[in-house]
Amino acid sequence: MTSVAPRAWERVLARIESDLRDGRISPGQRIPGERALASDLNVGRSSVREAMRVLEALGVLRAQTGSGPDSGAIILTRPTGGMSALMRLQVAGQGFPVADVVRTREVLERSAVSELASREGTDLSEIDELLDAMENRNLSRQEFLALDAQFHLNLAEAAGNRVITAMMSGLRDSVETYTGRIAAALESWEETADRLRAEHRGITEAVRRGEPALAEERVTAHIRGYYAEANPEE
Amino acid sequence: MTSVAPRAWERVLARIESDLRDGRISPGQRIPGERALASDLNVGRSSVREAMRVLEALGVLRAQTGSGPDSGAIILTRPTGGMSALMRLQVAGQGFPVADVVRTREVLERSAVSELASREGTDLSEIDELLDAMENRNLSRQEFLALDAQFHLNLAEAAGNRVITAMMSGLRDSVETYTGRIAAALESWEETADRLRAEHRGITEAVRRGEPALAEERVTAHIRGYYAEANPEE
Image 1: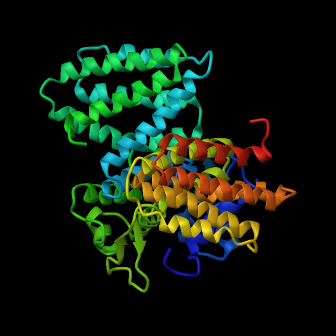
Image 2: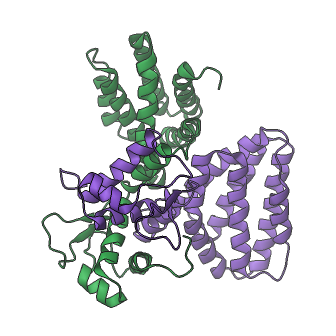
Image 3: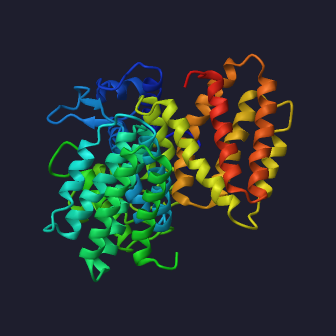
C-alpha cells in the first residue's frame, strides 16, 4: 500500500478482519449489511462494496444470490477459493516462473503423500475411482490432465492440512496450464499417458502400503519426469 | 462464484488476466484507464474500480498516488504482497488451524534450507546481521520475534523460489501471531530466547557447511520445539 492513511475500502477490510479474529462473526454467519457498515465506519457504500469484492476474491466471503444490498447477504465459506485467483494472476503476470511452480508442487506433494502413508485407515476410494477413470483410452489429453490434477489435489485433501490444500488448489490452474502445454507438444501422448497411469498407481500403492519414503520418492520422480519431457536441461 | 454468468467486475478481472497472460501488458506497465476499460467492456466504472481493488489486494497492481481516475494510473508490482492479506483473513476466519500453519512452515522452510545448503557461494551476510541483531538483550519479545520472522523469511528469499517465498511471506502475520502468543505465556522468556538464538546459529551453520539433511533436521526441530512449548500434546 502506498498511502500512509488507510483508504476507505481498506478500513472496511480491517474491520471485517478484526470482527473475524475476535469472534464477533464466525464462518457460516452473515456479515453486517452494506448500509450498516457504511454508516458505522463513515465511508461511502461504494467503498464497502469494493471491500466485499476483495473478500469474495480472497475466498473469505460468498455473495448471496438474489439478495438486496441491505440484507447483510454475505456468508463465509470454505477457505480454498481465494488462492487460485491469486496464483493464476501472479503466474499470468510473470511473477512466478513455471519452474518455481513445479518445484513448489514437489515440496507440497511430498509432504502430503508422506503424511498419508504414515497414517492408517485413510479412505482412498475416491482416489481409486480417479485412477480407474484415467484408464479410459478415449479421454482427450485435456480430459486426462484434468483428472490427473484432481488426483493430486485429492491426495493433498486426504492428508488433511488445510493450508497446504489451499496452496495446492491455488496452484491447480498453473499446473494444468504447464502440463497441458507439455502434453500438446508430445509426439506420442499415449506412451506418456501410460507411464503417468503406472506412476499414479505406484504412488497410491506406496501410500496404501504405509511407506512414506517410497511415496515421497515416487511423487517427486513423477512430477520431475513429466516436466523434464519439455525441459530436459533443468 | 455462485452465479453462472460472470458479473461485471469478474469480467474486468478476466480481461486483465488475459492481457497479462498474452503479454499485452507486462510488469512495470500501466493498465488502461478506468474510463477506457469501462467503455471497452461495456460495464460501469464502479465495476472497474471493484476489480482494481481486488487486483490491488491480490498484490498484482499498485495504485499510483495522486493520479486521476482516467490516467491508467496503476502499475504492476513484485508478486509477494497479495498472499499476506489472504492468509491473514483465512486464519482470522478460522479457515486455517494454527497447527496446519506450523506444519506448512516446516515443509516450506525445510525445502528452503535444503536448497540453500546444496548450493555454493550464497551470500548470507544479511542473515548474519539478523543473527547479530537478535543478540541484543534489550529487545522486547515482540521485537525479537519480528527479527526472528525476518530471519526465516530471508532464508526462503535466499533460496530463491518465488512461489515459496510468497507463501512464506503470506504466512508471516499468522506466524508472528502464534509465536507472540506463545512468548507472552512463557515464564522465562530469556531462557527460550537463548535457545532460539543458538538454534538459529545452528541452522545457519548447517547451511554454510553445505549439509542439507542437517539443516532440514535443525529447522524442523526449531519450529516444532517452539510450538511445543505451548502445545505439548501435539
